[in-house]
Length: 324
Image (cartoon, rainbow, N blue to C red; front, top):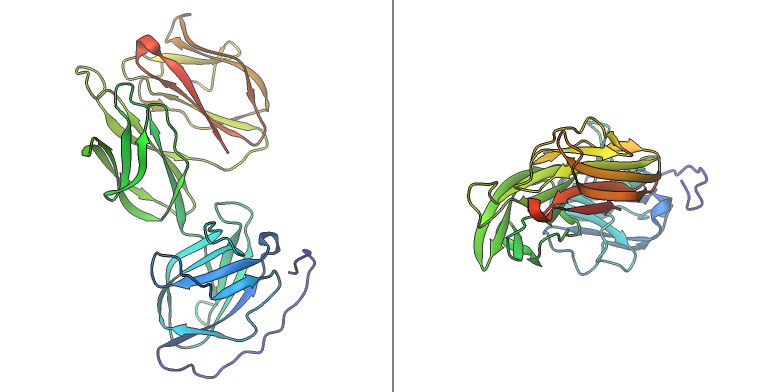
């Protein structure tokens, strides 16, 4: 596959010589033309190396010869050429063994966080697909009486001074197990163990009251985010007002997607609707008492919306999160 998307064939002469002891060898091909020129980093640590193994690597280009590295565990990352801050692909840690050489090809991917996958041609099995191993996690501060907080991952602060109704950008982490924590004034308020999967996005919502007893207390709640674009718009609705009663969700005057008598904390599934303008309202369940009114709300094709009822019941208000 060439840079202009035309079809071509590449003939590679295999080097069947046995590599030096404890050495892994690979022939590398850039077969993802939509990505453009890239830098390829192969590192033994989480930190991105100072110098790419292959620099300014163009579509349809190959490494020319077999690249050799000491056998071991490596993290392969691809960035736009000259832009190490933007990771386009991350393999996580993979084992490169001594023995028969590898053939590694970056190929196009139509969906997911990365525009490319890496295909490794082997002896047995004949090939494996090394998908991007990142997950995305963001934090939403939805506690009405909590102060600004810091968010930690495995004890390390990743977000500082997060205030009520703040929605962070997505943070990229490798798939695996983590502990998400919230700190106020240097003291941990709550923590949540989570397992995140490659290619998936998550929201962690800080909800409930910190200082008011007898109602929903402060806690962290995880949600899976479906960021797959649709032909129309996608929307989900979350009841996150800790002391508000159950509610009905109406769109253009009718109960929406069966969301009647919805209790705290409930998150609907995503519902796809045609792009357009909608009158969205939230009523106290089984009444005509409207507590949130969003008339003529424009929902765009390809966009993903999360409509959240937030704040204490006396001050209930909407928070509309739009992705992307």
